Image (cartoon, rainbow, N blue to C red; front, side, top):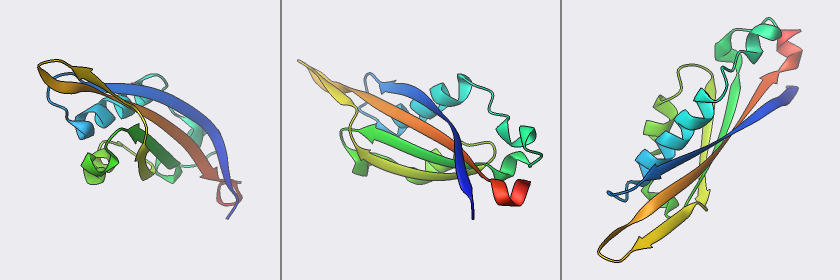
Length: 115
């Protein structure tokens, strides 16, 4: 397989009141997706479903992210989701911290199959 990375898009998501790491990650995924209408597959004559989506999410508590919900957020392509320690929890004096998730989505195609 000649999997070739073609672009990487970045996003940021937050959960300001509920300390919901999955929701912060989903907002970061949507932010990255909405920045760019990713139509790369069509440029190579491949269906959108052929896109390989490497999704890396950084949050302070990776174990709290529901990977199945993240995967289900993609309208097409083949997402491979990895959650790592990163992002930021911003302490608040009288409540749960604000959660910030950083997201990188790298889009690849198997160019041997598409050409």
